Length: 391
Image (tube, rainbow, N blue to C red):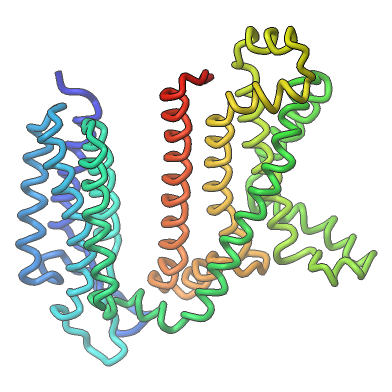
């Protein structure tokens, strides 16, 4: 019986074929800002178009017939990974095919190419759901990434407009990237330090817990930009009232309101995960620990916390990925994260400057999400092998 996920994969692989036929796979322009002419994959990829079309067609037929068979899913996953890698490589080589009308002319990936790459990755993930062997799943995910990395390392991508933008803003990119990731980790680490004991208090003391929950739920319901703007007013008042605060970087614009707003969101995620995890811990373990004479703190550190650790890490994963995205909004009030490129590109209608900020942000989200998921899997696997209790 064909599962629903297979139908979704069929549709995704069909869309990949469709994007190769439609306009706006890539575009060319006489300069960074100006009228952009959409190009089909056939117009911009040259001889490589036949290769990419052939691989995508093979993928489409494999997806239709694969069902839940591991070997066919493995082959389909490899084809999807090749589609992803070759789409990036061939897009870089398109600058040798497309003629530009001026020395400042640009050739760049357009919405069709980006969607083709994203969908190829989704097909990989879907195929991996039916592959049991870890080494096969690793090959499916890694193959396209290796091709893409080699394309960058060997300079195949250097002619693309986004790479020209990177070379132009190389110093700013390094500064914004460091600012972005440092702010994300400061927020989440602060959220962990405050959120774990606060979540424990919410669980242990129902009256205080209700107040904390209401406050955090109210804050969570406020849109990010609005909350950052709300934070600006009291911080501006305090920094003007006490000028010494400005010496420590506390003011109504820049990093401080961004940190405060995102810290509240992070706290919400971690406190909720902490409270929810403690609620499902089997009371038999708590009663047994009390019977052994353990204190409340000992019960938490030696019994409860080790049991709920995977759930806490999952909460941290959600907090970190959402914070990385949230830091982007800080550019609207003067914080120098990667959102600066997005804002600058939108103001100047320069899609490649937008992507210069967007792609690293999405890369960080996928990377840290993957690492923390694997950390949870490792903890659960270790517990199974050692016979340790899970929630």
